[in-house]
Length: 100
Image 1: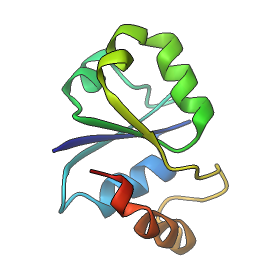
Image 2 (image 1 turned 45 degrees about the horizontal axis):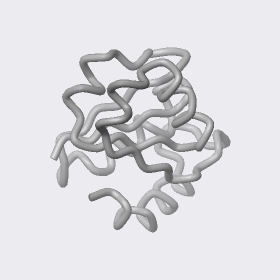
Image 3 (image 1 turned 90 degrees about the vertical axis):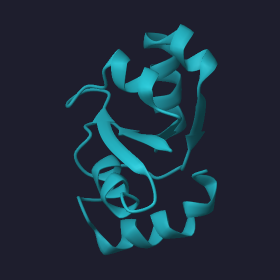
Image 4 (image 1 turned 90 degrees about the horizontal axis):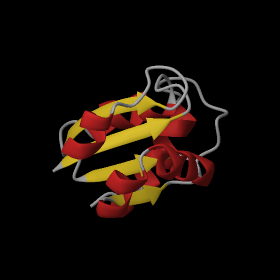
């Protein structure tokens, strides 16, 4: 399964998640405001995972037709973690059952 992780910048939360789950899924990461997600990435993804509900809304605003056809889940992880932060990894591991 192809999983696209999205956060604000595509540098910390989504990048950590993509690294963490790369052995279980084909993962990519992107951001909304830097390392900006591309239409093609969304189209190729089987599952889109955002970190905050506001990111889902922004994606739906920018790519409404694609988002209507895709499964999008929100992990509810605030933007307070750096890349590979042990606390972030622990949170992601507790939410791994949502990613399917």
